[in-house]
Length: 435
Image: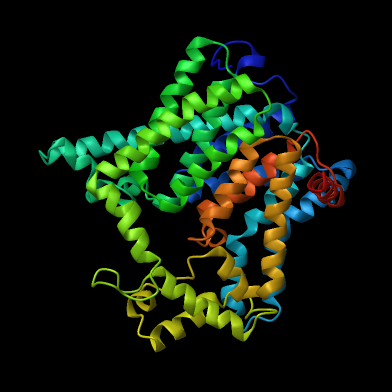
């Protein structure tokens, strides 16, 4: 339930806890509020949270850091750190490592904190969802102001000038990364809408759901939209009660059907979701607009990986070796814009080879199986977003998605009701597959 001024147990801002835990909670609260905005604020809050946690360290908290969960959560950073050892471009490798530091810090800081995340998880998720809803609403208001200022028709709202990156430009955030935030927020509010009993709260969640769906369509991120469709298709599997499952289908299916109809009937969106997707996955150029399709760049990265499949080329090498090959193959647009692989799996393969990729896949698999053990649909939605968007973006090379990955992965794992060992999780999966 939501209450801004009511009792502590119903209030997402005021909590009844020790002073140390209150300060930790407000650090995390401010962090999720600032996620959609300039990375400077997120970095300052993370440093402040680190200082606060260090001040309150003791032997028990230090001991809690050394756990299997912490090792798994920090493994992406540790893989990059290992790749520095054999990198020919160590300066760039350390720059990339500094950017990924949040992947190392968040699991350690949260495991060393005495804050009970299981108690406060839902509050933090709601605050994140409300932040994203308000952000999307602001972007729509800004877009309407642009239309009014230019005396343009209302249909201008769904033109290429106000969709995708042009829609998210006022907050200077990549449309795909903001779409990831919006998609997770959408699933969060669907979850709380189904659980909520108070009518006014259900109305608030429903309003946020409509805003977020509109924002998801307007941002026009193909990978996130496909991931969201997959999550919605997967959602009923995690619901054990038939009544709630039916409520979900009655809520989600009409909304997503309306979104799909809108995409099909609006030329700019239809082009973005169908024509451009097909062109981007074409190996060779098929017109003058698509000079260097993404598939062709993936093919270059794949060929480079084949020359060093076991250990890759080392951390910090991806752009350097790609630039050389872009130039040789006359991919001048990719060369001038210094484009990376735009695929997290290929990126890891180039830097640290097959062993780095296997560790990353293991981390995602562990997270998904843990979500299944806990029937945690929100955790599963987060893992799905990471897995899908990793096909089209280097999510561990950009601050906004690094923060998103490190914070929410830590939040979901350390707030899980049941955190079995790796062997136990895979044993359960094996046993169920034999039934």
